[in-house]
Amino acid sequence: MRFRHTLSALFVIVSLPLGAAAQAPASGAAGHATPARATSAADKPSREQLLTLFEVMRLRAQMQDLLKMLPAALEQQLQGEQEEVELSLAPAGGGDLTPEQKAARDRITQKYFALAEGIYPMDEMLSDMVEVYQRHLSREDVEGILAFYRSTPGQHLLDAQPLMAKEVMPAVTKKMEARSKDLVDRYQKELNDAMGPPKVPPPAAPKS
Image (cartoon, rainbow, N blue to C red; front, side, top):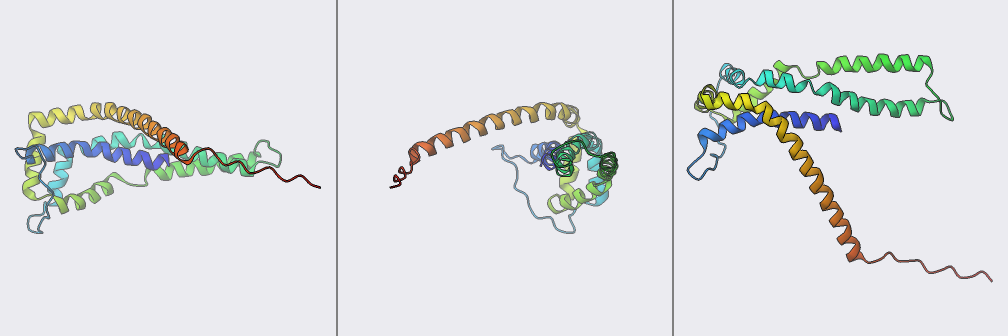
């Protein structure tokens, strides 16, 4: 569904700055990032330390801006559901809904738009992220990443990241759609060529 796809895209975009920062200080001479390692309880970063990291990364502000895209995606999804319901409720032979049906439709739609706004509060989202980051980053890791984001290159990355995301997503989507279509077209042609022409059933015997 488009709503679910949009959520996935948002989290990919938001994860870009942390991925870049984590690789920058941890890359070896060959340019490969250091593999993830288990973090001991004693070396686990505190919640406060990670929340500071999120603030320095401007993660809350970025996610708030990106989450503004969700109502439009949700509205499109609900619109499709609404049209299906309207078709099933329309009087036999077609026609408009009754005034009562339209009023019920509008009331319920507005109700669910309101519910969607608070479906995943920002503070809860950040708390869930803290738990994940604590499993993969040490205190030393977080201090290094904080130092990077507080540096001039880190600040430049944060300034440029929203602009880069706006350019990356359309370019990636366009190429993926074009190459996927080409792949499917080639598959269909090769499969048809290999299978041969469809078998034509023999003509029915004439009735005596």
